[in-house]
Amino acid sequence: MRRNVVFILLAVAIVALGVALLITVGNDARRSFFIAEGLLALCLILLWVFYARLIKPINTIANGIDLLREQDFSSRLSPVGQRDADRIVEMFNGMMSSLKEERLHVREQNHFLDLLIAASPMGIMILDDHDRVMMANGAALRFLEIDTLDMVVGRKISDLEGGLAEAIVGVSQGETTTLRLSDAMVYRCSRLSFMDKGYAHPFIMIEKLTDEVMKAEKLAYEKVIRMMAHEVNNSMGGVGSVLDTAASVTDDPDMAEALEMCRRRCESMSRFITSFADVVKIPQPQREQCDLNIFLSDTLPLLESLCTGRDISLCFESAPGEVNVMIDRVLMEQVMINLVKNAVESIGRGGVITISATSSPAGICVADNGAGIDKVTQQKIFTPFFSSKADGRGLGLLFISEVLNRHDCTFSLRTDKDGLTRFTIRF
Image 1 (cartoon, rainbow, N blue to C red):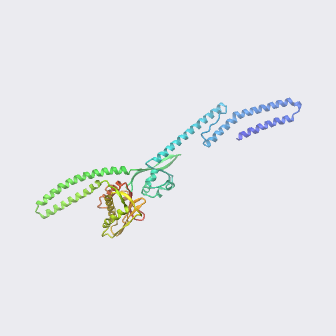
Image 2 (image 1 turned 90 degrees about the vertical axis):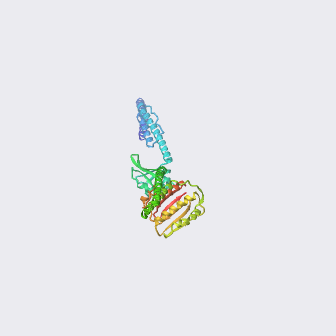
């Protein structure tokens, strides 16, 4: 722009000089005047050639720089009529075409990645340098039990509620680990990073493994239990028969007492292995519509009998209105017995167990003020045959989880900040 102004001022000055000569010269100097005018005209022609050869290409290049600065890759420069300058213009236009195609390609790739992340069954969260969530896909929100993206963006993972968020906090950068939560859910969590503009951006990937792990565990323990039950029951049957025969022919009271003790031990071993086999033989639920309020109130007398002699109060809180669900009453009754029995054992003596029904969503909550469950135990309680009790077999929660899974329920067991341990079931 400045070059154009200088050129225009120079042309105006030359024209003004010619006009001044025309005014000042006399008739006798006409010949000199025309010579001077011819020289001025020649200067104007040379000035125009100078503009066409130098100033115009420079202005064209300056316009190209402005287009690059504004990232306008759709515009093109026009040729200026000079071979060298037009080569630069042609190269510039080719570069602009390449940049436009590259930008379009990047946009298409980013759009594809956005669709892929949004539809991915794996939870993905991108974090900033301060561990705050910048982006999370739908799967991550479902795993974290968060309704909308606004509830998580800009917040640290440590500020989020829920067992999964608490477990993710303990995953180090570059680490991949398997997390088993207190709601029997199993996740594989990876905290990795990707490069963007020369900087490493951390992100978290969450993969739900619950179904696969449960199927593998079930196949494994069913096979082991069947084999154990077959071998033990066959052996105990033969040993018991021999003991009965020996007891019938001996006259020694001490020997008879020893044989009877062995026989009772065989029966105890048989009942022990049968209790494991019963877990494998859980029937498929025969569901029927039932009001949770009525179901729990009908089961309450049986549950109260478990608290007899322990100074434990059993309270029932019904939900407003009817809460109709499809359940197998027999199996769910056994679930409630096991839950209350566990709560009683956790309390010992002198405590309160509260059973409440909820309508939105439909569910049952069994809360007790017993000893509680620590963080380490919470991650193992639904592992097959795991028990925190010295004489426990790990069958109670295994039975409960199996029945609830067959009812398509979600559930969790954890000790909250108020000190109460809650087993929550959602239909």
